Length: 375
Image 1 (cartoon, rainbow, N blue to C red):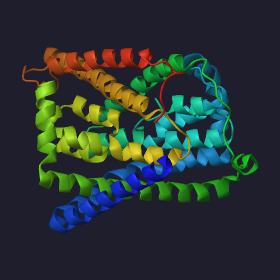
Image 2 (cartoon, helix red, strand yellow):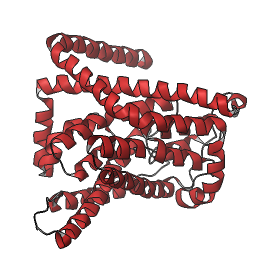
Image 3 (cartoon, rainbow, N blue to C red):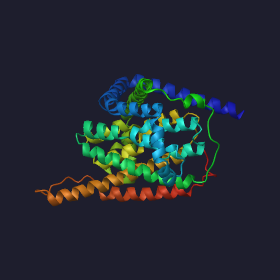
Image 4 (tube, one colour):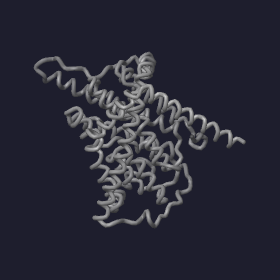
């Protein structure tokens, strides 16, 4: 009876959402189409040129076996820093260099090869969610901001934050054990193609990944556009503005929570400071999170803890960017002929971010692994 009730409840919610979506699309058809066009435009100008080459390279490294060599070189550091087996080294490296989807894909591949347990896979997803250099340096820095140095700062902050969270997660999950997964055909998964075949298949993998990302970005931009017509972003922004006291976060709160590409575009176009972009990229947005959950499939992770780590990553990376920008600003004021240097940060935001980081770390450390409920 309970199972039937849950099924009917889930079906009712799905029907309600579908019916509401149809009504909203009919009423706000212009806004929906504008959102889709905007999402496709972002994808063509930013995602495809910045992510496709790195996705191609990441897939080629895995298929050709080059990632295994990288894993052997970095295995000692991975065991000491993150309390993970050496086989996880290549996945961590690719998650920090390949961008958001790469980490989840690599973790699933390792789990299917029975190189990781379900607990270790969950641990890796606490920090192997990083925007890569392709998107931040090429896409945001060079293409969007016309300032490659800003892209380097953003990526460096993500990298440092990811390593710190990896160390924290290693201490939380240390000693937790579960059976190695999964039921996949290990013989086929361990098969390595030749260089030519690896390149051809990697092109197909990258094309499929970019196409999926493009569809998700278009869909979420449609949702953002329709929600804007309903006044939801202003309502949420007003509430967050009262809590944070920061106009930048309040103004971009909804788009930061939903889709990272749109958040970066709007933040740059409206002249937001660099730390706001880092905040958006560090969180990743629900669009990225849904992609990750979809890729992981039957690998269960504690979603409450996942979102806590996403929040920690957002605030930690924004504080790092704040610090770097403050240092660069002070240096510019010393050597500039005129003292008019635009301030890119506010002390209130930095203090608040630090406080949130501390509270988040305390919260995560207080969760007992064995008693934590899975969602």
